[in-house]
Image: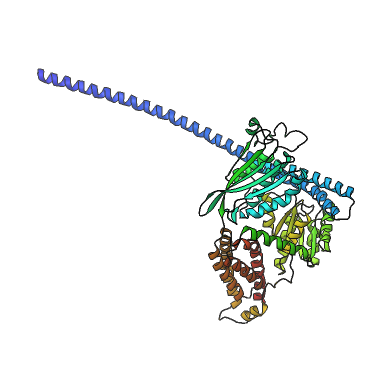
Length: 569
């Protein structure tokens, strides 16, 4: 009996222990659930805070974008407003200087030109700084002929250097490739800025330009540019801050030298944009050496730099001797000073067939009533701006199967985004105000048509195809046109990619295919464009074909529209 009693007690204790464990387990479960609930509430709260922060960040981001867009629009407007009157001042001064003047009058005109050029330089510095800060500065890669670049800069600046009693010398490393790949405009801008600075702070001394090869491999060359002067020099303290915006040395701030203190800051930003380095070595009273290093891609070239320069000079001489061909020009500009100036410049170039209008609507009316060799179109005009007028003109050309008339944008807004807008609207090229007589002459020479334009279609071939009937309801011409429309746009886009990337072999093949397909359908004008591109690509000169790319799509659309009309008839 005692054994049974002991067993019962042990069972009772076991049950009590199990019950106690179950109770504690339940309590632990409840605590865990409570903690989980608290954590879940915290998570929900955090999610709400995160969503709120995301909304705030998105609002802040959008505000920053809007502010950036407003800044860019402001810069664009200011650029145009400043450059338009400056174009009138510089242009009229240039025209005046070409006329018979007394020595006193010629000196007065020179003062006007110098003052206007200084103002233009200050405006350009401010606009460049704004574009850099807004992230709107873009590199434009192309061929860099350093020897030609240096020669151009010397021709441009040597009169200023001599005026200060300085001697300008050049030392260019012969190991540097004849042709390199980079942004020639920005490299030129940096060198001009550094040379002008060296000349400004040097009197009766020397300004020396050195270009040396630092590193050389199969595809690139690292080039070091140095501009050394024997001028006033820079203290070590000033050197540490010299490349900051608006920073000038104490002597540099004096009225004797002038300037905004933006030039070196812009140079540093441009060199950084090109992934290079820039610096200065100087001692006060012993001159300065400003330098920068850039890595540039190699390009194939089969002639020496000296041959290239000589050829360019020879061609320039021939161009100046040649008389300007007969050209009819439509000029659209709402600014009366600019209209008068451009008409005087055109007259100086021997172009007297000029019609001037003051807005886009009048430009379209003139275009409908008369055939022009070239249209000079201001970007900003009342009633209808240059972009909208260009779009309408291109639409008219397509509807009426007209040959494309070259349209050149004229504007004081020289930002890359505005250039892109001009091209998207159908403009062929861009000329920024202020522009000289020489710049205008080269632009007209580039785009003028010396002979009658090629017809859109070879109608004899088209009629032969049209007369060949098929067994079905559709004509052979209609079927071929559908096939052409299906394949051609994609091939044109592929051709554009090959040309831009410099793939000469692929570009040759695609251009030949497009040319053959177009000729078989009697598409004359477009096939000539493909033929020109094919020839450039065969010669390894794809860069020269790039200006033709913008003409392809309008010519293709015009050809399809013309074939569609013939097919329906």
